[in-house]
Length: 166
Image 1 (cartoon, rainbow, N blue to C red):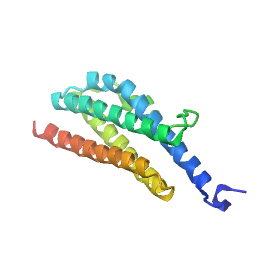
Image 2: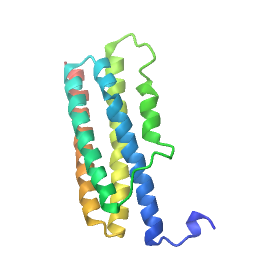
Image 3: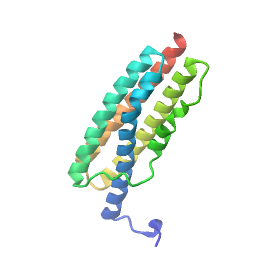
Image 4: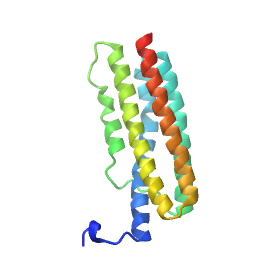
């Protein structure tokens, strides 16, 4: 029987929730361990500061997800392919030599925004499942993660605009 033929019972929804939470969680972990390299490569001071703030926000999001795992009485599992890790692992295409700092900086801004859009979408997806399963506390924690991701996306859009005005 394929997954589309199965009835979406609470146990199946819970598995889907945990699977997607794992992807977001380990993607964020991977990103936070590599953020210092992005800060080092950035040349624009405002971008460096934004990346530091972004790292702090990621750490808060990870703590919230730790709380969700605690509420569900499960441990995170890094067994699945992770698209967020794949993007970061590709080094934001920063290993390719750039003749201008602006190319590196705008690549960083672009990839951070792509990651935040993935996070926004993942949080929406997880919130939908959390509501279906009546995981009220998880829904609230995911709302906070979602709001931070939206704020970070806006922050990097402002950095982008500031960059071109400087």
